[in-house]
Image (cartoon, rainbow, N blue to C red):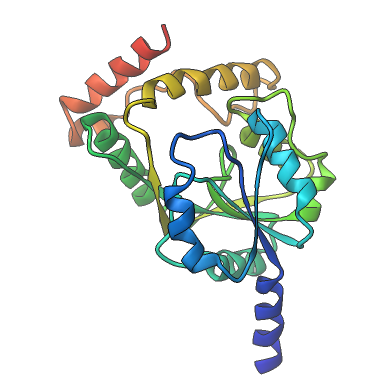
Length: 246
């Protein structure tokens, strides 16, 4: 047992932290805070534009077998790597991501946070991921390289959906561990502008997709449970979504 634990700890220590810069307006505040939990690992940040290019640059820089992808607007209150690695080993999968909780003061971010809570309730524990899974996630570097890395044509969003789709097509699985929750800080001033940019990426993704596989629903239907939880604010949020895409 001691040897097994020692080997696990050695493997966990052989991990690089990858943070793509440029996709958020809050790149430094949480990175500095997170370093107190992750200061024993090698940390890389990107220097190129376009999220697909940025992730590929980080993938080339990294040399470790395990990669923790950590967006710069995600706040950690712990080192997530041991827990993510434990799930990865238990199920022998290519990647494991943490659940998230949106953080913000404005009413529309509180709706987003409640949608996160609903997701956590519905999928507590472990679930298979079919779409975005890179905000705080541990991946095997070799498996990302096996599918050719990220598609650089995705420069605003959709690059993570696309690579997960290709990994699934190659028989790989990515899990989400909702027992492990991180805080996702959103810039309240740029939220709806970025929402529109993200949907450009999802439109690009939809154009390359087979009909039977739709990991990202662009115009999602009204969720009845959310309607019961927030009967006024939730419909207003859905309306604001549609207005933001005009």
